[in-house]
Structures are given as structure tokens and as C-alpha cells.
Image (cartoon, rainbow, N blue to C red; front, side):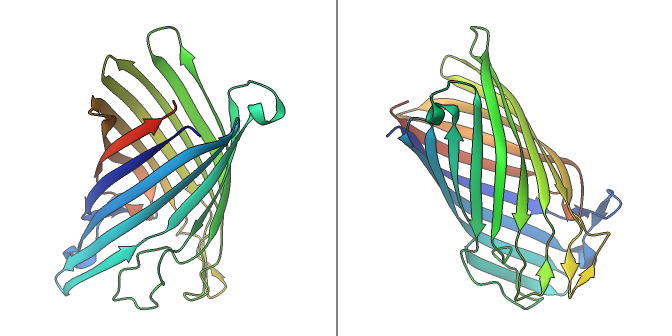
Length: 250
């Protein structure tokens, strides 16, 4: 019965990307990609050791280039997950298995001039998570490693390739103030298009995510910056999110 609910806004502007060699490179035609999103996220405990989680995003995506401008609005990829802790089997270890899925929240356009709001396929993932408090000063460390099976986008005749991912974070609190420094890593297999393996198009990403939170009213205001450090075949723009989180029973 305990849980939390958060509404957050996100923005990113990208004028360059990580090319297949891992170098930053400007987009063609001096293009500028802008992402503006609202995320509604929540989680609730079902029984001791079992939590369910869901997230729905609404995006406004736009590109401005020398050749013109294009804008798309709508629901993005919807994500759902269940976290299974050791209390389900009567133990009390700091370990959990998280099983999740991602499904398209809108149609995928087979049109190179239209920005897609979703990746166009269903993904399934599993991760092993852990974390614990450090001392008595409100410090903690947490992290996970996982694998994502990415389904084929039949409309685009493209298999995006499976991915491995990981996260590590250290955080703490001081009165009403909370802080966290996290890092994400992503390793993607080479995709296939029309049955041809595109060996240079596998996705890679390493990014740092510092977060500050402060108690405000009945909930907590949290600000996070997304700082891409290195990658391949992904945008290199800095992102920023601001969210308000409310909890109950915790």
C-alpha cells in the first residue's frame, strides 16, 4: 500500500551527436533537435517484497534545420515494471529483481520527414538491483545491471539490437535537502535493417546525472541534469528535468 507519485518536466536541446567513432559531430544541415516532455510516474507496494511501477510520457519533439522545421506531439513509449524483493521468500537481503516492458504509446510513422514519438517496438528487460545505507549520516549507495531484449519494428523493417545497461549512484541528505550523483551506462548491439547488420550503428552512452531535492509542502521538488560524457549514435545534448514527488506510507 505504500508508494509514490511524481510529475516531472524534461527539456533537451541537441545540435550535435556522438558519431560511430564516439566523437561529437554536428547534425547535418545545422539541425537543432528540441525535446520537451512531461513524465507521469508512480509506484506502489502490492505485498511485502513486490512493487509495481509505471510511467507515461507526453512529448513535444521538434527539429529546426536549413531545410525547414518539423514538430510532433503526443504520447511516447509507456513503461511498466515489477520489482521482486527477497521478502517475497522470507529473506531480508538488499537485492531485488526488476522485470519491465516498454510499449509504444502512439503509432510509429514510416516517414523520414516526421519525428517519431516512440521507438516503434516492444521491449522487455530484467535487472538485478541493490543498495544500502552507509553509516548514520544519511548516505547511501545503490545501483543495478540489466539486459534489454528489443523487439523488431515491423513497420520500419528494423531490428534495433538488444542492450545491456547499468546504473550506479551515491546520495545523502541534510535536513530538508537531498542530493545524489548517478551515472548511467548503455551498450547496444548492432541493429539490422532489411535483414542487413549495421555494424557501425550500435548505441553506446555514458552519462552523469547529478540531482538536488528539497522538501516543499507535502512533497519533494527534485532537479536533475543529464550530462552525456561519451557515446555512439545518440544525441549529445544536455538535458534537464524538474519534478515534484509525493510519497505515502514510507
